[in-house]
Amino acid sequence: MNLTDTKYSQYALVREMMDAVNVVGRFNPSQTKTVAAKIASIGKLFLTGEGSSRIFPAKNAIRKCLRWGLPLQICTDGSRQAAEYDLSQFAVFCASNSGRTKEVVLLAKKLAAEGNENRFGLSANANTLLEEACKETFVLTCGWEQAVAATKSVIEQALFYESILWTIRGQDMTAACTALSRQVQTALTLPIAQSVIAAAVEAPTIYFAGYNDGVAEELTLKTNEITRNKSDYLEGTYAVHGIEEVMDPKDIVFVVDPIEAEIEKFQEVLVKGVGLKVVAIATHPTPFETIQVPDAGELTPYVYLSAGWNLLVEIGLALGINLDKPTRARKVGNELIV
Image 1 (cartoon, rainbow, N blue to C red):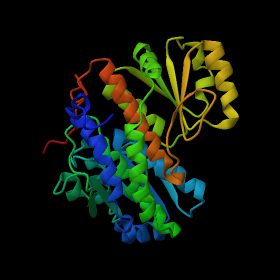
Image 2: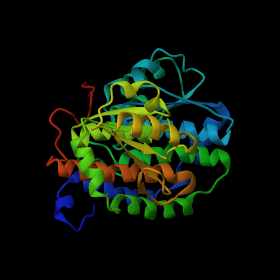
Image 3: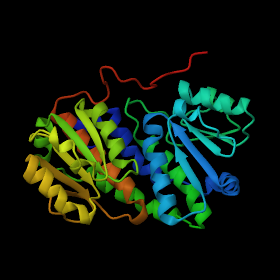
Image 4: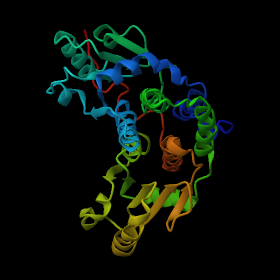
């Protein structure tokens, strides 16, 4: 996709996806330096929010923290479930782009009533209900999005959380963010094979499989919002552990960053067994038809997510859908009215 063609540029969704390039390029990793020191001293971090404000930002941070072996415990769940937990020993980040999401604001208020002084907000708006309930709130630079489906804010939220880990790890990722902006742009604009788009358009269900780092799961949500198609997230090897029994040969599975040791099993069960099409999103060629993206090292998940957005826009346009106006989905899923 590109902004020089009105086929794409007429949609706020596409413009906001492309805005992510500049959001990444100007991201300031040092903005979390002070809060990172607080979190490091506490040793426990809980990341909550609803939908896109939590899926990729929180799960990407958890995977990175575990891979790097940092001395920090990070957990995540939705705000309603989190309200059942004893979070008194945790620093808690409550994310809501609108700053008005009911579940998130009520959790922040509950933490305040319990005396948790380490409650932080992350929003795309200033002077919100969330800000009133949190001890300190950080406002994203990306601004408020017009399209229902969140995009550039998801990228900035994830970078924000990950920058906390960079500080704890003693990494300066400023140059890496500059490079990442170019790699995100490449992923957003690379051509998607018509064979892939056609297969996805005809698929009763579009599946995304991959690591539990939020990328495949977030793309599953975006499939519903952007293409209005049924979609499901298959964590890890879930795709070959029973669900094949109900898969349709016309379904399609997109495997994000396929694990080398599992490729043969996917071929055996899904391609040969079910007879469906499997497409990889990866940094290198695979035995499947592959959407190949630049390798951004530790930051490659952002590139995978961007390529997935590109793919979904092409599918949505092929289906003749107004990308900006879902029939039922709302910009603020459950707004707190006071």
